[in-house]
Length: 303
Image (cartoon, rainbow, N blue to C red):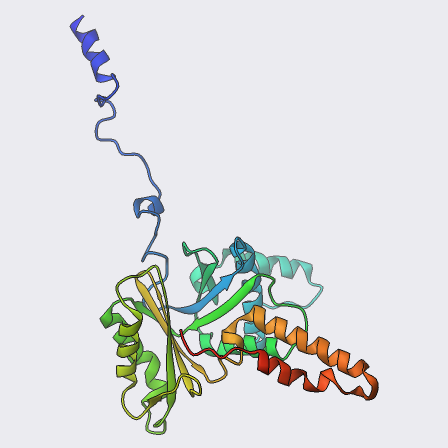
């Protein structure tokens, strides 16, 4: 009687059973870290990469489109990858695709990193990709083309030359490395610059403190000009990491690297030029289309 009663009590509601005492439920690494795995999001100090924004609920499709776009652009800039096969070699194509699937992610030129923010993507890059020049080339190509969109869902691309920790010391370290080639050589005095920041899911560093620290690293001999800058410093803060890059003066002209806006403007310009060619004498809308597009371009001076 006593033993039976004791066993019933051990299994009673609210009482832990001796058989399961000390056991822990198995969890994935992501569950153990509270939903954010490895350095909060897989982006680590020392990385370089490209931020991207996209249409709502189109993150997966946009990721695939951008990987295709990035790889195509990389092939044009840096040449074909090893093992390229001639067109028509079906077996070779299959072997190549299998090899790419088996290839470690760290060896790829572009590795997508999942971030827990809607409509936001990040792609790690590795050499020979230089994020600023790479994104700039994509945008200039899109601006001069009236062809098919590179992606149906991609919005803005933001290159990051270097990633560091989102602390004051981390920001200073990244600033010294990224800004030196643009501001600290003897032939670079008198540069006009602007600084723009974007902060997501972070409440330690403020916009004003970031701008002051970055400007201090830029140092004397240069001056702020929000409208007619020679160089623009982009600072992106996300959770516990910060990224920085320096982009050229045509950033606003290229719609702040917003591919959707660039493609729309290029297509509208092409349509207007076509309409102008159909007018008597070949003049009219087409000849003034570029001026009309420029007049519609907003002046952006804040972050």
